[in-house]
Image (cartoon, rainbow, N blue to C red):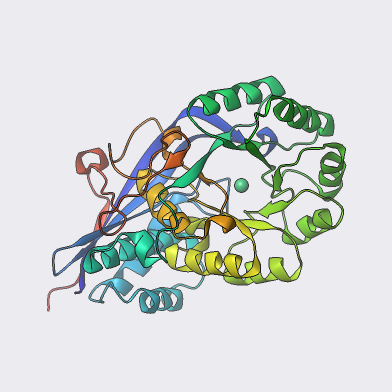
Length: 372
Ligand code: MG
């Protein structure tokens, strides 16, 4: 089996409602997503998607993915798509770094490996640990009562775990948000307070020590070193997200005893191949993991949740789904979707999601093997 053609699409995904992060510093209304389809000489095609959450959340953006694909796609043409580690090393040699740009190709290779072997992705990534994956809501930054109302709406959709976005320069406001959410929290519910790097270490230490919340706090400050400073002077479990990119960053976090858990996001880490290595490290060192993608349609969500399903339950926290935040559906009826707080993964070979071609519209570009 050889890669014969790689087709690229760009789609602007509008959010159903504006969304604020990092204490209101960052506002999002639309996401720029890149889709790839890898065709082979033997028939099967694999799908991949890369969708950084806008361009201000991470050092990643849609235009960067499509520019990097000009270098990366030709590396795969003519190669056996099932040689996934080999092809990742070839991409890393051709274009060091630029991890987020490699993730759609890596995802499509996994989709093809699944189809070639007749197995769903979760079987290839370690085997299904249970029947479904718990999913969590994502609560936009706002006034305390607005955030409590958003959690009530999420509760009505079955969510029992919530990621509440806080942060900013006003410790009293953050303390008020946390206390309001804790007062409204129902038995059995979990809340993670995601600061999205908005606090200085001093502010993080002040707020976290002022609240009795039992929940997790996530990415309080910009850098790993600042988060370590917070870790040493607070008691709540810490989750790290935006400051971790390559495998080495995770080793550094572990050596520094910086956190009790990490987010595992294929797009941020460079694809499912590299995300799986971080997942395996996390299991080995005893971390708790939120496994989900940075953003995107039900395609990216489902690919990431296959990795979650194949992770031992004692190591995983709930997974977030991006697609319910979007105003349109790339693949109606397909993939991992919230059903009363749980998502069931497709058992079809590969990812089990193919975007609707009419919805995708005209392709941007196609890379093909030159005629001999
Ligand atoms: Mg986060």
